[in-house]
Image (cartoon, rainbow, N blue to C red):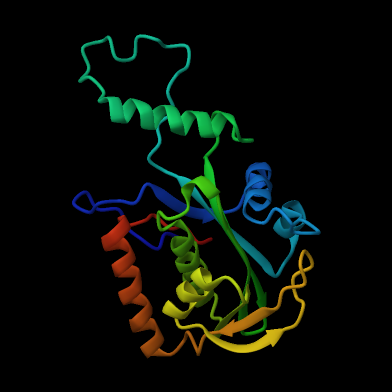
Length: 231
């Protein structure tokens, strides 16, 4: 089910959301190592795919046509010439992919979000984005997708833990209605840092839905509308 209908007159974000698939596991594992290098034990994404309460979404680059590396005449056929900027951007994209576990024919995964559904609670267990692509609205897009999925599944509240030192993430969560409700002492195994427990009010409340819709519109106005397939 798509959360956004594509329209020809709307600027689209070059990143889309869809559920995690088995073929995405190597890339998701790679992103987790990049985003959380000290995490132990690492997430078993294969096991999570089979877990009844776990749902994962991935962000993938949706406007990134793959060049044919065997075709050296691509720009010699009378097509409009590429700018130096576009050539450099294409080279960077291809180089970043070749350094990853991505393979031709696959979507290039740039981030993921995992949610566990516990009775009426949707608990966001992890949000990860490739380090070279942070600052482009992808983390917020993943949070939006997790919240929309939770609403569709009839959850009442969203919850998560966040490092007490991660002010940037806390600010994003507060923007989407999370407030600090408690503290887990020495929660993180790498350095025994504490974690804040953050929770929204009822996401079924019409006032939350209205505020959330406005934030989604603002995100779309800044970064472009995104194609979001939640199930």
